[in-house]
Length: 199
Ligand SMILES: [Zn+2]
Image 1: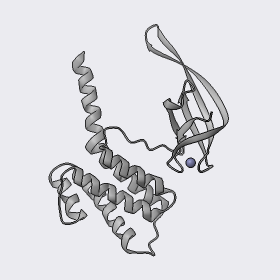
Image 2: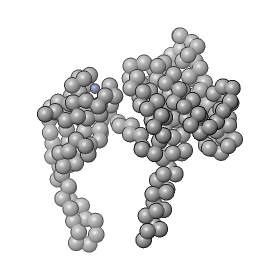
Image 3: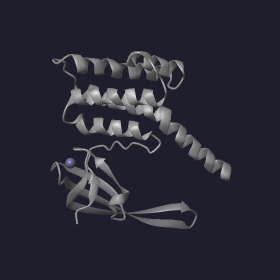
């Protein structure tokens, strides 16, 4: 049976046909005398939904322990609130198909983030300002958020706007930086602290 993998082209978790398999054996030493053999499988696949090619890395031939090496995978951490996570995934789904749709949806993700953080205001501009004022995000990140808002405005109101792939990737990076700062980094710090305190 074809493995179920998350396609980074069409954004669907769907079956993939494996065209070529490669096996790499790695040897890791964790402590003195404690060693492990690790089987790393490389799968060159074709998505059964969109028919595009990808390269997956997986451990021990298990699709549950896989990640996509190409195209670059954008994995959202569990620490990100569900509604924001879903909104961002929707944006990612359309990224390759329509830049305007991506911008509109990434702007919508930002609106949802503001709502989740209980930041109110008459428009997105004032909400972003408050994210900074309440120190939910630092000033540099409010500049980034405001850029998403500005480009989102253009995406909504102008039909002749041309946006480069690079700008689209920047917007994506900005949004990821914001959610990393608010949700992912604090969760990581908490986990590390818990581990240290247990020792
Ligand atoms: Zn696909």
